[in-house]
Image 1 (cartoon, rainbow, N blue to C red):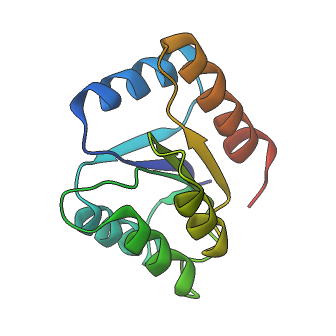
Image 2 (image 1 turned 135 degrees about the vertical axis):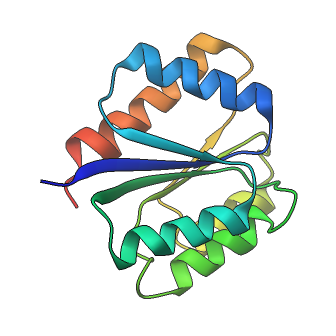
Length: 138
């Protein structure tokens, strides 16, 4: 049986630390790989899809990345028939109507605005992980 994999694409070290803390406290038994650059993450996603011992269950994606903008990365993932099935959850500080409309128009599976507090982040990410990794079956 293949191991479940979650890919987190986030360029902010503080947010990566918080996400790691949330996942550790949730105790969800999946492999998690972190990328600060969208290009590297996209290469890894394609590598996993082509042939890997992992089953890619979820991509957590920030919108503001230093190389490929998260919006462009979303468009690439959802525009490619080999990757469009992968659940993508945006985790961003942006709550602009334009970003929300863009993401949902480009078939994002969920959009989470980064909360200010750890407990709220834990609640929101916990709900997303429980659904996409534990409840939803790909």
